Image (cartoon, rainbow, N blue to C red):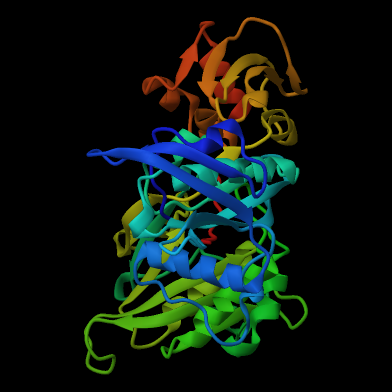
Length: 449
């Protein structure tokens, strides 16, 4: 995603749909007044143009063309477009911010209504005029109007979204496994089918990559876990389009009997130099979903059994994957990077806090500051028995972006306090909040959009 900063924007006043707005812009050298029109986009021609604008803003992204049409990739009525008068006076679409309907799994297992924000960009000829800021602010209003209590995104730039109330709520890790050194411990269980190391492979089978999408969507839908998001049909359509577009070989295997599958693996090959003569061939895991330990171990055994492969690359794994603990030689596993994953925005703080569960016997009164959605600003008494608004003195104070960081349990309260982002007013309040919001495992989505 790409967005730009604004000194002042007409969206500060709260634009209605398709209302003209204006604001001063500043690019470091000069300033001026920009007048714009923000609209919700439903027309196929407008939606196609919006996707072209987004791809141009990120430089080099391919635009879907041909069949299926644009409505297969976007949820009509959700994308926003910002228009400016062009050289001949006609309105031109110069920026966009998209989203689609989804749900987020929160601590306790509830799935809350969520806006999956994507395709945010402004043409390079129109950046630094406050247009992206106006789009994002209007999108927050749109999300609230639709009754969605959270929004999430994946950010291409790390310094943009906090000022709009987003906080990093989960992370992902990149892992490489050296196959020659990766021997599973003899204590690692095998599937119940058959016996010995061949038992797992008996439960894993290839499926046609081009005909597997409905099956994969069905398997994915049965999963759970804090931080997980639902993948609607537009998500699957986009990945199917991308897979069909590439000429590289793609592979899909599933685990479980037909009709009772509980896991799958999508992967492709990669190598340094030509595949047949390369001394560094890799399997790159594009998507690994396992709803049971048996499915995970069987799919892992399959990966380790593929001939000709030197490395297995997991681009996005949970930060607590502990893959190395399954191997005799733990050094066969190497973490190559940790990245932010879920950027979370609490649209309705009361509803979001009430949707998740808490631990501990102590209550904490938290003062929340939200300048963009001021209805959220207030004090909330949080305890294991529930959440309620209160006029009591605050024991902790955070802004809405900091609260988003700890909401799923992916950030610790003491980490916020070290950075001055959580202020403790009652000694012991931080410790109580740690207990209330704590989880056994960190959140993980595993879904890019």
